[in-house]
Length: 219
Image 1 (cartoon, rainbow, N blue to C red):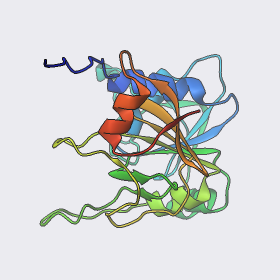
Image 2: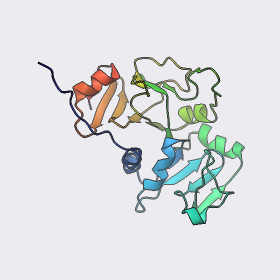
Image 3: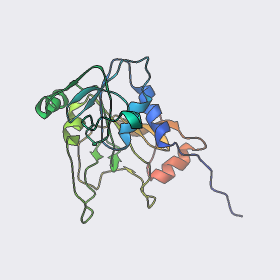
Image 4: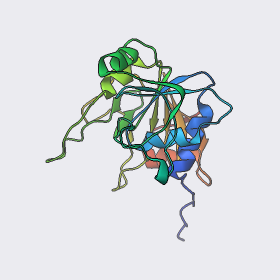
């Protein structure tokens, strides 16, 4: 007798971004990484005072502008148009990286290719032939921020888990990841491995563990 596999509804990227935005505490200074994390800026509550940092030299970054209000000279580290909130500031790379390396960021939100259950992160190279490795400021952010949130799809295009026992790609940082947000779950990195805080609709802890190839515990 065949069994129908359980159905689940993965979160969209905007839903993931909204969840991260909701978890950021009022008053936090937060670096928004390149790629998927850029969506978080569009979901921050106006009732919270959160300072967004971009490594190319912006503090007080706002959400994406309307199509008819784009300033080509105002871009984030991912070269995407952004806005500047009242009181925002521009500065050079040396000051920006001093903020990152000096422990002045409460949270860095990064994308990743892999996150290990001990908190290691690999997010700058898969070693794929012809690919251009570009670590940028990720290493500085990984070790400089007080907390590191990772936002990524749970599985690769060929169905491999991005949550791993040990990273097989070149490392960005060691033991630095605090929490992982995927399209299937939210997980904390603990001394005992990944602890699941939340699951997408229809997902069970057992199914997530099977997809991840890891032993997972509830937070």
